[in-house]
Length: 94
Image (cartoon, rainbow, N blue to C red; front, side, top):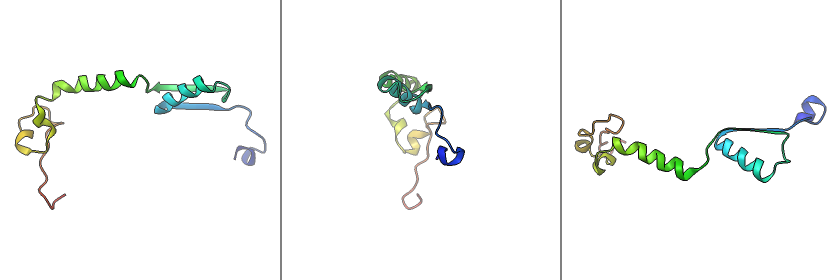
């Protein structure tokens, strides 16, 4: 495509990725360092065990009990965080 548009091959080749693309950029740089002339790994999503543990840990204070995870409107009204308050949708109205 570059050759058709510019009439010549690409002079350099770069890999740019962010988040999951950043994780892919790190893997590319580790496994195949000669594939690209430069690699930018922006905000790479790596160390998944720590990220997911941190996400759960940060959510725990918002959830007072298991009823916070249900669609029961009675349980939802007792939850102080409005992000977790949901109304039950009657059957047929979804």
